[in-house]
Length: 193
Image (cartoon, rainbow, N blue to C red; front, side, top):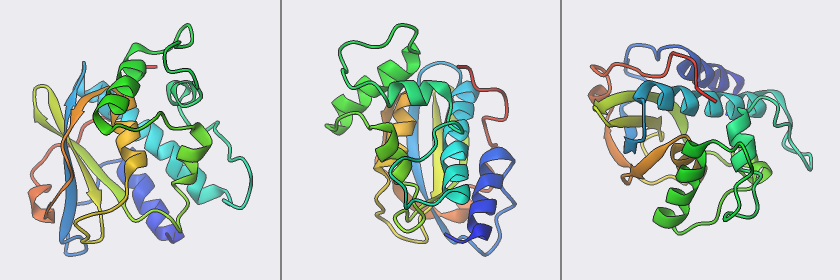
């Protein structure tokens, strides 16, 4: 990813995406059932991904350990727990339930924090954030730019979707970019810890 792509992605994570132009003809979209406030959920997703994209923009991936300071505390905490049956005291219930849902629905183990951050290496990631919008009173749509590909590896995104407070997640569908245009973005408030 070039610096311009990082800048554009960070802008879409921290400010409203630009009006749909001819640049993006198709987007991948996930339908996500959410626990609690849709806006708080969206803020948590944005906060976590903005931290990871910021790390990818500002640091070299040719090191053994990448910084975790730009990431929210709840993500660092849940991604550092090795014993899934003994959550740390003070852990956030939404992230713990989300981690359990991820394990159950995806059949995967919890992500290690450094392993998760490493997936944002620009040479490895084939998707970029586009937006998060309301779908129903209990669900959101998460939109990503897949560069027109119907299938992209994005398990690191699924991890965040769940540990930010998702109850369930659909498979990604490729849709016309114009389907996003009329949607109202979520998550501009403060994420709860």
